[in-house]
Image (cartoon, rainbow, N blue to C red; front, side, top):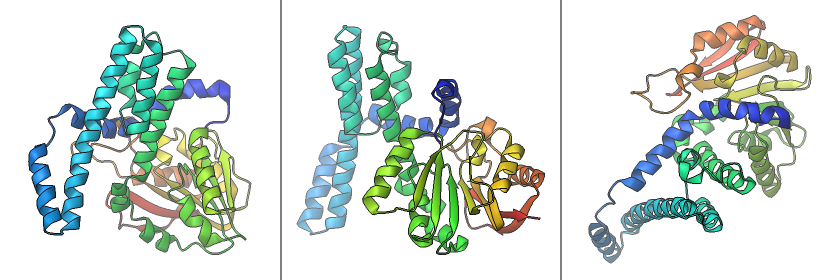
Length: 325
């Protein structure tokens, strides 16, 4: 989600950082790859050569991708070390060049850079903030769109289940880079609209460019407050929140705002992570944001919304459609 007020944005950054603990976990795994010994390159070379000789292009590609992954992680780690040593030597311009190259090359745990005292003299400089923000954004987009997400999110089945109609008015709250927004837009068509709501302007900028590129002219980008979806009263047929409600502190008050936006016969759709121990799923919301399906039902009930349809096919998330009782 994305924020409206510049004065409030700084206050919310620590909270957003905590909310994105799952991103740090994912990127920490990437960093561990960089610090662990690479696979036996000679064995990979032999595997690649054997696959090519046998015209096993899929096997050859798998070997080449593995080689590239290790080479990329080694390169990222080397760039990071160069950047911090340049900073320690006072070579600020060269440190920035290495950090900017790091952002261009691949994914990196931005918190390692932000916490590193080697960059203490640079932390408050606009260029440092810009490059670390770019590194964060690249990692966040990867998290939203990584191929593994499709395996547990099952977007095609979710879309089939929700059966959006031409002309429908939909709000995708916490739209991010448009994982669902861009799927909904062509279905509701030119007579419909999709409000893509988020608190992060940089994420909405990415979605704007993608919508423009794909000719999705019925998407309305809306930068909103963390505690207010700012939707038009009584006009929305479907409000969709995927992996977003757990960020909201006062869910009962938020549910009342959702209900106020619903058109007659409208629905609120909540898809969010089932609470699981970190040993079972070392990613997802941090402990203070985990919520059960029963807690969501209770929050919706405060707004006079009750479960109308419950879908159990998602392995990591509960999936409930709520309507006015």
